Image (cartoon, rainbow, N blue to C red; front, side, top):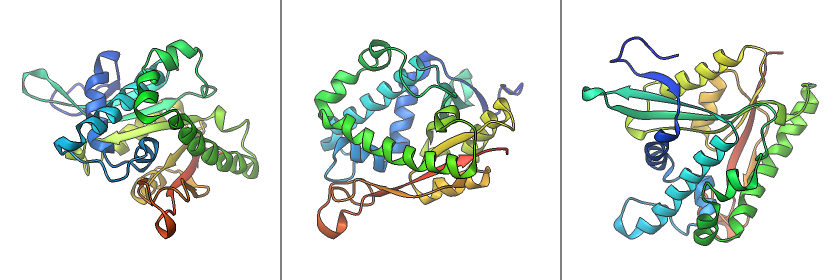
Length: 250
């Protein structure tokens, strides 16, 4: 999987020792993520200013929680690393894929309590899980309808599901995300079925280039947030878009 050229960026599977650096990188990539702004009920975009330190800590805790939860669910976490002088690796990108049949945690303690759900509920409120459910249930419904219309075997739960994909802003535009997506597709085989939800047109278009098809569009948080996931009222509370997508070899 890894390149023999130590100076070239390469892909490998993540280790638990990578999680702190991964969470730091992901926070840079998703500091203004609409879903995460929605989960946190932010009333303004998150920034790197000192006044937002506590809110950034909450987001960091969420990302770390998500990594540990996915690890407990045996997700395929692939990272693209850039070697530097002194053999230090910089994590430039990551994809987190849930294998077919893995959509529910095998153990409440290992996948929810141990990774850090309680601190999240204390900082983001018990409504955090309700907001997550709104997003997940809305997109799953579209994917199920698409499965039925395309006569695909099983259900979306039987696909390889891209839960999260991110690139360090300093390394965007280098094709690293495309490398990560291609690597998993090549590893799993041409007949595998893949599902995901893009949360912006730019990401959607990247996935289209890799054979994914947009099967719908849903608006999350209508009546409560704007198109960036920030709390809003009235005409601005249109919700933010999510684009369920499928790739299949049939």
